[in-house]
Each structure stands twice: as C-alpha cells, then as structure tokens.
Image (cartoon, rainbow, N blue to C red):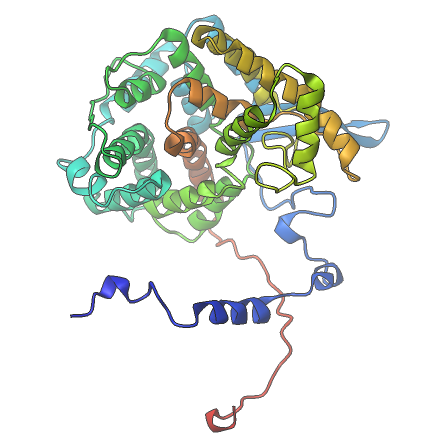
Length: 455
C-alpha cells in the first residue's frame, strides 16, 4: 500500500518546477521605483511606511534639530513610560518586572500594589494545561523546531475552548491571559519532549509554582534540579521585559494587526505571530550572535588583542569568514543608529551575570566587539548610517550563561513578546472594523489563451 506521507518527498523534476516559478515570478527591480512601491513597506531611507496608529509602544531614534531630523540616542516607551524608568523602578525595589510590565501593556496604566498582586495571582492560576494535554499534544511528534511546537500547541488549545471563535473583548482578553500564562509551559515541555524522544535525554515535567514569577518558573521547569540563583532569575526577567514589545511596526506585531483585522480567532492570530517571529530576520538573530562568537574564538588566538579581533570583523564584513553573509550579527538595527536603549539597559546586568558565572573574559570580548564593530563597518561600508549593539547582541550570551538550550532562544523571545501581541490584538479589535487590505499592482502583461493542443 502506498505510504501517503512519502508522496511529496520525491516529486519528479521539482528543481525544474522551482526554476519555472523563479522565472515567472521575478519582477524587475526598476518597476518598484517606477510605480513608487515601498519595498518591505519602507522608503528609500529605510523608514517604515506609516500603516496605523498605536498607544502601546513607541521608538525614538531621531529628533528635530534646527528644522532637520538628526539621529539621537535611542529611546523606547511602553505606554508612554520610558523603558529605562520602568526597569530602574522594579530593579530598585528588588522586584521582578515581567508581570507589572505585562499589566501596563495590556491595560494601559501601571498597577497599584493591590492590582499587581491580583494580576500575579490571575496568571498563577492560569498556569495549567487541559488534562493530558502534555501527553497527548506536546509529547506527540516532538521536533527540534520549538516554534512549530508552540504554534501547534496554541492551535490545538482552540479545540479545548468552547468559545474559541468569540472575538468579544472580554473573551479575547480571557484567551490572551490564558496564553500568556501557559506559554512558558508549552515551550519548556516541548523542549523536554524533544530532548527525551529525539536526543535520548531524561524527561522532566516540573509543574510551575504559584508563588514564583514567570522568569523563576521558566528556570524551575527547565532545570532538572529546579534550582537557580536570584541573579539568574532577575536577569532572565529583565530579558523578558526588554523583549516584550517594540513599537507597532515590527513584523510580528504588524502580523497580529493584519490577521486580527480579518475577524479570526485569538489562537490563529497568535499562531500567525509565532510564524513571523520564527524567521531569522526577526526573532532568530540572537543565536547567530552566539555562533559568530564561537567562530571568532576559533579563529582568533588572542581574543584580548583588539587588532586581531578587528581583523576578524573586517574579514566578516568582507564575507571571508563565518557564514559569508557579510554581517556582524547583533550590530545595527532597522530603526536605531546611535544606540539601542534595550542593549544599554541590559549590558550592566549581563556583566553582573558574567561575573557570577566566571565568564568575565567572554564579556570583555563582547564589549570589545561592540566597540570595534562600528569602526570596521564605517570603514568597509560605503553606505553608513551609524550602528551600535542591539539587544540581540547580548541576549544570546545571556541565554548561554543561563544554560538555555539553543532550541529555546526564540521561544523565550515569544514568551516575552506574546504580551505585546495580545495588546496589539486588543487594540486592533477596539479601533477598527475594517480588514487591512494593502494594494498590489499587477505588472504582468495580458496574454492570450492557447489551446492545449497548440502549446
């Protein structure tokens, strides 16, 4: 009997068919300029095309000086509050910030102590999956691709919700809070299933604790002994806060707006956002940074030698080493030029963790690359708007120090960013009843039909 699963694994002439697609789908580059099409929804200066309005988050990278827009130190605001002030607020008080900032993004204002406590309890109560869900869904067909596992789990959760298609605001908020609560479980349990069934490792399914923060629970569930240091939990909590939201224009938040505008359910919208974040141009950059540094350490005999490090970075830009893409991963950003405020906030805490882990030399190397890379790029690139280390430059290093497996790097990003996605979904539902429908101009000339016998 024919194995239906194998039918599509060896399609005859697939390469020739792909070449046919490539030939007939190609659009001449000059046409984009002729019709004034903003490729990637960006203008010639790389600025995003204004596609909507939002209250949730804002990025400032330029300021008006003497009638001209000039680059400035990067600023990031959550609901109008500077990210630096948010972080200093909860760090100064010795608190974890994930839950407090999640409340701010979802509801538009900072909670008082009573409301924050109630919100934490609500998320704690929500850290539970349907009966046998872990066994019947997460442990079935485990895969190295945790983002696909997350997406599958999210879509399957719709089957357990008798109001899955109800897009009234109270119901969508209920669904959002549930997904925010269970995302760490879905990600960590998916990794343990993969590690056990595909890698031969031991299986650990630790239940979250109602008394712990999201970051602490993530480490508790991941580690065999459920132990972690206060600094480890605090640095991971900070990473989640810094990745929670980043303006309305990022790819996955825009995806959330677009899909939500169609009237679809919450599970489908979040699954679509996951698919967007999974892309290496969006959420997968931090692991590339770690791989790049591993290659640097293999090729540079003395990482403390600035000249040798700069030479490696030069060869990197010239496509001579590593993946030959010509990129110094973790350097530069589509919006920021002078500085990424998230990286500035993160750096000192990364240094503290490096000291605790005995990896000061490695942190010194990261600091050297952050200092030398802009000089190399300025010298090697003809087009130079200014670059600096972005948050991904440090996050991969942090995750490696925390012992997170690489398969979980992007899912941890998703555990943070789902708060932003849910906030954007709620905002879209409140403000519009129109489906987002961009225009595409067809540039294919009309051709006549040719009968089959004459082709």
